[in-house]
Length: 174
Image (cartoon, rainbow, N blue to C red):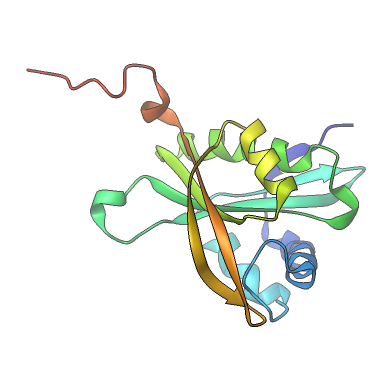
């Protein structure tokens, strides 16, 4: 069964924190090392940025969120995103479904691009992003250390909304 996607609510904070904590423990998807409590992720749910959850068998199996890429006005419309799937939900298309839904929701809210960094060795996340129309556009070498080990990150991006239209690169002359 494919996941049903919906906008996250405040009552989802505990489950979102639990899924994020699994990712922290697994050391494959985030530089974070300290577990998060539901109150720590509550800000994600009330800050006005898109946060979606994927439901499978009546439970939250994953979540995805967007935040601002930069506070510089030239980057208004570029969102940095994260997607996390529970251990039990991995390998079932939940991440791909979340990425597609997140792109649609972000476009509805005026974003024109989603971007993120993925650890180079995180083959599952890279595959889900490629399947959802993201392009790998570069590698950030030794982008950070996780428990003393340098991590390289793949930069991914997907044009959405107006920027995704085939003629978006054309300059309109007046």
